[in-house]
Each structure stands twice: as structure tokens, then as C-alpha cells.
Image 1: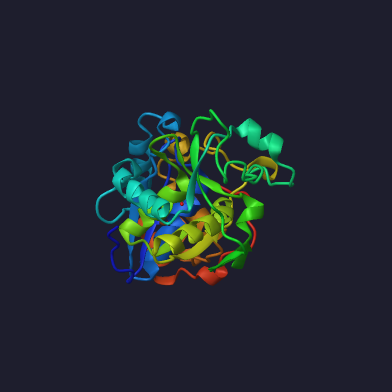
Image 2: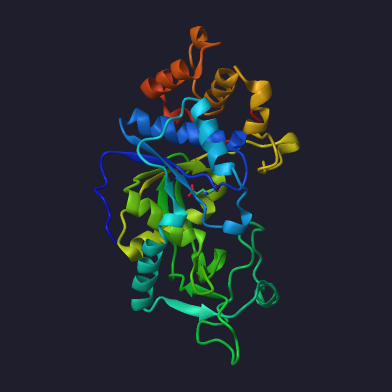
Length: 309
Ligand code: GLU
């Protein structure tokens, strides 16, 4: 696998075109943009279009137009996961050659039934390893799993500090491919970032619990580990998690037309930044220019919350 040199900073924003950007994705876009640009780096846009059935027609364009309307212009060509299949295949073969993968016939239902350990809803129960020593007779291959390592996988997050996870307890041996050729998120994102030379990953806290899996994959694939910064989450009414259906920035653009600066100011404040009063009422270009010169990651707050707009 060809991997480009790791310095200077290359950041990225990697939305999935399964819905319009919401205010939570805007926080990730602005945070990743400003942290990359503050370091004098590049900011790439990748459309995570791996999960074809969940994609919504027109969303890739919608996302790009929304980013542009906030002045968030990416560097170079837009990357797409759908174009990286060959890299995923190479990574899969490398892991297979190292005897780290095995085929698995278990359905979700079987895994839930076999699981005894408590688990977080996000991750589901850890895979109990039923197929590690071979599939049951007559089983069909539903997925390919990678053996989780013994001991903890740790990494340092700029905002959250050192995070350690025992993958055997959190997810067990995790799937990296479904069926014959459907590569899954954990493998894909590691390969995508490696191929593009991304060395700074700034994204929402909802992905924090996936990061040890990704760090583990980077280590065994021999890919450099990016710097990580997971941002606080924007919550909906009553502190609920935002979904693609909520706070649709694009849907609001008709009412927000001309108010993008106001929303961007709210995002900067949400990220703990304090633009001076003379910038209140400014457009996106001035606000971003201020952020590029002065974004201070140390000010990003510990907790998320709602985004007042
Ligand atoms: N495409 C993922 C999402 O929209 C984000 C991937 C990443 O940042 O690693 O949730």
C-alpha cells in the first residue's frame, strides 16, 4: 500500500452521504478545518460512500454545496471510499497473510444470544469468538473478523487525554468485511486516511470508542497513527443525540440564507473560541480567517450541549 509522507498537517472531513449535514457535522467540519489550517496544513474532503443502501441520492452534492456556503473549501480532489476498494482488498490480504482473520457465519441474533457480558448500545455485545476456531458445519460466510489483541490498546486524544480500551471486552473480534467484498467502516477509514496521508483526525466524540480499533489496525498494517482530537457533541432537545433528521443545516439554509455567519459564530463559541465583538455580524470568510489565525484547541470544552442559533 502506498502511503504518502506524514508531515506537514493533513486534516480531513469525512461525512457519509446518508443525509444532509446537521449542526453536529458542521462542528466537525469547522473544527477539522480550523485545526488543519491553523497548523498551516491541508484540509481534505472525503465522502464516505461505502454503505450504498443507506445513501440518499443528491446528498454528496448537497454536502459539498453546504460546506461551500460556509466558506469551507477543501484542498484538492474530493476523495470517495467507493474508489478505494482496491486498497481495502490489499489491506485485507495483508491481514489474512498474517493469520489475523477468520470467516464467521454468526448472525446478529446468534451473537446477541451467545453474549453474556454487559455492553454499550453503540457497540452491541462483544463478539464471543464462536467462529475463531472454525465455523459450524454448513455455515455460510457472513463476515470476516479480525482477532482482537490481548491487553489494552491506548492512544492519546488531544482533548480527552489517554484513552485505553480492551477490545476483547468492548467489541471482541470485529468484522472488517461483510460477505465476499463489502469492506466495513473500521478497516476502510484506516486505509482511506493512510492512503491520503491524513495525519490529523478531528471528528465527533461519537467516534471515540471506535478509535482504539482503528489504532490497532494502523499498527498491524504499518500505517502511521494520526493525531486525534474528538470534539464535543451537539445535542438535540433534552440532551438527545442528533440524527441526520434533526437540525438539518441544509434544510434550514432557506431560513438561514445570509445567516451562515451567525451559525458559524455559534459553532466557534461551541468550540470554546472567543471571537471579538467586532466580528459579531461578520460573514464566514472573516470568521474563518480569525479562526485560522487564532483557533486554540486547548479551549475546546469538556462537554457538549445544544447549539444556539
Ligand atoms: N463517515 C463517518 C461519519 O459520517 C465519519 C468517519 C470518520 O470521521 O472517521 O460518521
